[in-house]
Image (cartoon, rainbow, N blue to C red):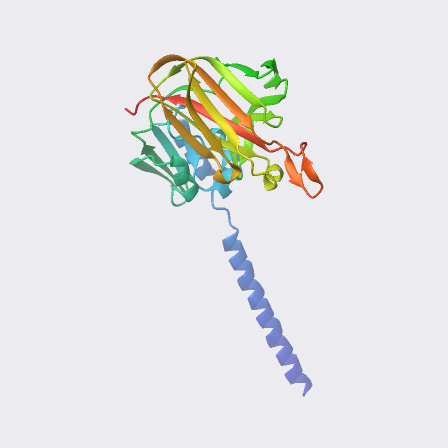
Length: 297
């Protein structure tokens, strides 16, 4: 092949490579350009700051969470999505569809009334009412009026943890079903029951959840935990909850007014099974939340 033809072919190939590189650079610049400007974050921060502080604000797009919470401190309280029963109004910040499948699952049958949308550039702030949700009268995760004990006597408070004869209980964030939840982690030995008892103000219903934390602990233990409720010394409800139920909800209708409430959680088996046998030290811990709710408005 003549030298000039070889040089022409090399020049054409070099031009094609350069053109492809330019197209890829432009495409990458478009794909990875920032979705949000500082002005977008400022607008979102102002919109969230104008909301009532007692109304939950949720983020629809979980993947956006770390970035959004860095710019919007008001979203810190939505790290673990709250139970929306007990929240007559709430708000969802979203890039697209506000009611994701996970959020719809957390609604657990609540009917919603859309109240409007604020356009915030790439984001939108959606407002919802849940007329059937009721209001929260009492929450087990607040400083409780309930006294903790196990079957061998009272538990002692040590910082944020109750230390019992057969374990410890802590109000903390926990991974349950691959999502953060704030709950009472009941880390007791096999078959030991943790009990809270005291006088509280009840509404129309007691509503709670129980799930198991620690992924490794859940892998090789499918034994259930037992949740029991007594009101004024009378057993009123008993639920058997297993790990495959995820963040399992339960509810008990109650008569409004003050009452003596007893809450009891028993973990049938706390350890896990390994090729070498049962390992009591790799823990799988049940985690509980419970609230008293009023009748819907």
